[in-house]
Length: 382
Image 1 (cartoon, rainbow, N blue to C red):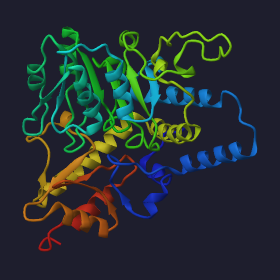
Image 2 (image 1 turned 90 degrees about the vertical axis):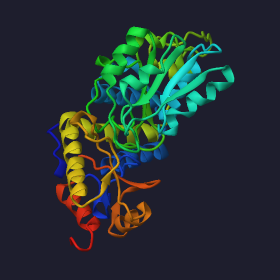
Image 3 (image 1 turned 90 degrees about the horizontal axis):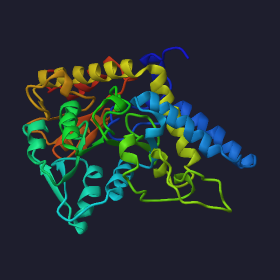
């Protein structure tokens, strides 16, 4: 298929004719391709007999698309409902002992907190790194790691300030110490280029409904081959064993690949919508998508600084710490008032506590970023 340019991709999203959509770090709108695919599937399911194996075939297509998007072999990928689902498979699958600990960070999205906090009944301590001026530094993380640390669980990109973690430096040291590195990649997968097979990451998870342009209820987890066999499946069924169709002589033998985490047939509707989003990203190319997302986000940052807004991010920032998330506030103006001004102008953003968050995707336009700045400009500047 020909390379999909941002202007052409824009035509695939009907919501762009209704509003200026800048909340991809929250929920992405579905594309026209997803709607057409879902309508075709619904027609099939309501007018023809179900075709055996349809779900499994579609799951393979999704796995193949994900493999190309995030740089991981298909057998290292499992399809899950959400980030929390994926991380819970790791938290629930390890053999814990009282006195073990997990290292996380304060300010993480709850999907990367509750799976670890739930382990306290097993005597597992959850330690949290304090951000330093918005940064989760390798030094701070490693200072909490000791001989009883089993897992370090962090986000690649922080949901509230867009800070991008140095996965390579932290992961390399954890690998040397034999500590599992689990990463929430929901705010990077689909927006930033990933090559999970080449990163020192043992486990990763993400819902597909943000930057991956899929529906709520479908995502993926990645598991290093060396780790797969060490994890006991939390949920088991025909999808998680080596011989799923041996109905009359069942034999419980968990799959050697990450598919051991898929206990049953997956939703055809969710798979169909998810595949449509992944195919758009692949046709646009991860490199073009990342360049565009970072460029649009930087246009917002520069403009907001020029208008006197406080950017909620580490300072001074470097390019490799940036993402598609731009969070800001203005002294003397409640964040809720700024959010209402944007909403009244037809601009979809996200209000998080005392900050407003913007998150453009690759199909957004430069003039849309300028429109945001125009709406937010103080009266004396307009």
